[in-house]
Amino acid sequence: MTAHQRSALGLPWTVLIVLALLAAPRVVLHDLGLIQEGTFVNALFVFVPPLVWIAVAVLARVPRPFLTLLVVGVLYGVFLALGHQLLWDTAWEGDPPALGGNLADLPPLAQSVILRGFAAVGGLLTGTVVGAVCGLAAWAVGRVVPARPPAP
Image 1 (cartoon, one colour):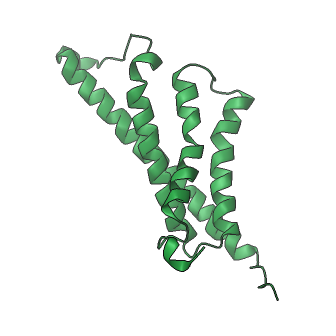
Image 2 (cartoon, rainbow, N blue to C red):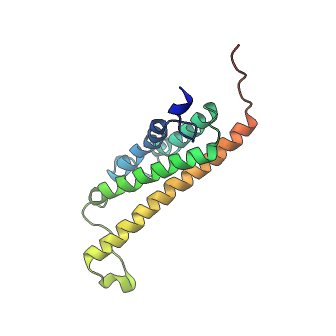
């Protein structure tokens, strides 16, 4: 790979997007009710993609692993937010949540906009936090694991 094919993040954008997409199937499977929280299969979908992100960042010796995986996390957050929005009706089985208290009297459309907005922001924040934690882990591992010597 030539230097101009890499982004400033140490990996091509296509690789960053593919890494983010590794975590997207869990969103779909969860929202469709095909996997349940607390199961081994769910744990695989939760933990394996971020571990792959860390491994790729460390093995590729990206110059700024925190920033690189933060970007992957933001991309994942976008996919997470989009997935939840696209599967909203299916996930809630036709009975979406409603606001309570003083906001219960808002029209259904306003309630939907508010709830979906918070879900989208929540997805973006979740992805960003996962990326930041993975970036910190990759940075720490990169500090501990010595670089491979160049081939003769």
